[in-house]
Image: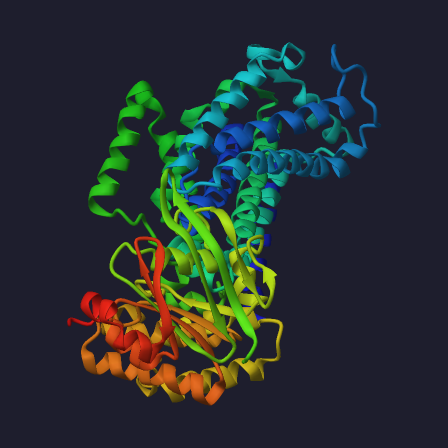
Length: 337
Length: 247
C-alpha cells in the first residue's frame, strides 16, 4: 500500500492543480509556467535516456520536438478546427477531448520514426558522430518546416487555440493543464519502466563498456535504436503539448538553442538520474522566469550557471543517483528499481 | 580424430588500407586446447575479435576468407548471437569487466545469455565459477574495480563461464599477472578442459606457458601463420625457440 503513496500524492497534486486553474485561483501566467515545467520535464527526462543512461551525445532534441509539434498540430487542426488551407473540421468538436491524446501520441510516433532515421546511420559509427548528425538533423528539420509554405513556412502554424476551444465546448475545464500534467506523468512513468528494464540496463552497460556489453550477448544495436526512438518519441509528445499550449508554433522555437536548453537540464539534474531530470526541469523553468526581468542578460547568466556547475559539481545536482538514495525515508513510499 | 569445431579459412582482415591478417587458416577440434602465439602486432587479437564478430573498430570487416563454426559460416552472425546462440565466449584483452559493479553483479550480468533457461542453470554456473576461483567467492560483494589485476582476470574468465559456453577464447589472460597467478589461471583452464571437455583457443605472448598447456599451437607473425604443430613439436622447433622461447 505504501508503494502507492507516490501515486496518490501525484493524483492529489494534479487534481489540486486542475481545480485551482479551473476556479481561477492561479492566474494564466502561473498556469503557463506550470505547463512549461511539464513540457520541460518530458524533454529533460527523455533526453536523459540518450545522454545520461546510454552515454551517447545527442544535441538535436528540439528537432524531434518540432516534428511532434507540427504533426500533431496539423492533425488536430485538420480534425477539429476551421482552417483556410485544411478546410472545415472533419470531426465533431466533442471528439476532440477523446482524440487529443491520440493526436499527441501520433505526433510522438512520427517523431520516433524520424529519430530512427537519424539513429540508423549514426550508430554505424560511435562517439562524436552522433552529436554532429543530430545537430545536422536539427537544422534539416527547421529548414524543411520553414520552406513548406503549406504549413505556414517561416510565419509558423496556428489554429490550435480552436482545438482547445473545441474541447472547452464539451466542458469548461483547464484542458491543457490537465493534458500537460498527464503527459509528464505518462512520460516519466514510461522512462522509469524503460530504464529499470533489461533495455535500460543494457543502455547503462553500453555506456560503461560497449565491448563488454557485446560479449555479454547484449544486442547493442537494438537497445540503441529502442532508446533513441523512445527518447525522440517522447520529445515529440512534448512538442505536441507545447504547440497546443501556446496555440501557435514556429520552426525557430525548436532551434539549436532549445536543444541546448534540453541538454542544460539533463546535465544540471545529473546524467542517469530520472528524479534529477525532473527536479532540474522544474528549477530551470523557474530560473528562466525569475531571470525574465533581466531580459537579454539572462542569456549570460544561464550559461554562467552551467560553467559554475561544471566547475564545482560536474556530476549535476543528483549525479547518477535518485532521490531515495539521498533521503532513505523516501524508500518507504517509493522504490525506484 | 574428433570433430572440427572452428575452422578459419584464408582470413583476410584490413584496418582501412592496412591489412592485418594476410590469409590466416587454422582449425580447432572439439575438446582441444589450441594456442595462437606471436609477438605484438602479429594479428592475434584481430583474429579473436573477428571470430567473436565484434563490430568495428574492435574488428574490421572481413575482406575475404571465411570463419566456420560447426561447419557453418558465422560471418553473418551478430556478436550477441555468437555468445547466446553459438555458445562461444570471449575473454577480451584488457578484461573489460564492469568496474562499478560487484563481483557477483558482474557474474549475474554474464548469465544474461541464460535468461530463458531455468534459474537453476545459472545457480549451477555460479557454483562452478566459485569452485574454480574461491577468491571470487570471498570477494563477491566487493566492487570489481577494487580487485587486484589477477582477481580481475579471474573474474573475466569466470564471467565467460557464466554463459552457456562450450568454446572459450582467451586473449592474453596472463597479461599483467605475476607468475604464480598466471599458473593458477592456466591450471584452471586445464581443469576446465579435462573435467568439462571445454574447447579452448588461447592467444598468448607467453609462448612457454601457452605451449605447456596446449595440445596444439600455431605461430602467427605479421598476419601469417609461420609454424604449426603439436605443442611439443613447436617447443622443440628451433625457429620458435629462437624467436619466442629465448634460445
